[in-house]
Length: 290
Image (cartoon, rainbow, N blue to C red):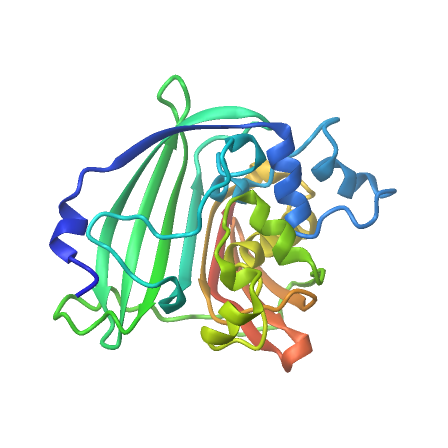
């Protein structure tokens, strides 16, 4: 078996120190398709160092971009886990923001396998990361669900049941985001060099007609749409953001994000109108302030 559950869960957390600069932040935002209209001050604040704002989802790539030094290698390096990249998909993602992320900074990140769920034909690896600043103050906590095909059936817990509940009314807003045809190639420079997002032959072997956009890119695209469209462009108002990845995007696809607001809670549903409204993000929620 390629997953040793006991070893994965018993392993000590991996701790590393990372840093980032304004260049990393701007490159990340460009990888989300930001900045097409350079005359728009609202767009420029995401990609120009003057009064640069940081999208909270940058936390998922902090310390992995152009300021990291050596080019990161594609792979999944976790204790007790040795699986083929072609068998994995990013199933879900959560982010809790404890403090505004600075445009340049330093953090200590602790990573651990928090759980491994048995879904029968597949396994779900739950990876948790926590980040603190130089004073030990919490910056962010992330939870990643990695879906590994053909790795289930080991008799483990199937994990919690999750049921999507959508408001029984029309959304308060529908936000439209257009991705670029080269967006995956740009986004991967922020650290995720999985060839699934660049190599046509590798993508075909994984069952896709061509390279797909990173799941975390669609996660960031939707986050920016909501920050701009619902939070007055203020990223510090976002406190928690969780989604399940329901379908892949190809670079160049359009994303439509329906938003329902109930107080400080937003319910989201992202779909791709280019492919008959295929779901992209489901079971998606945000907790916001103000």
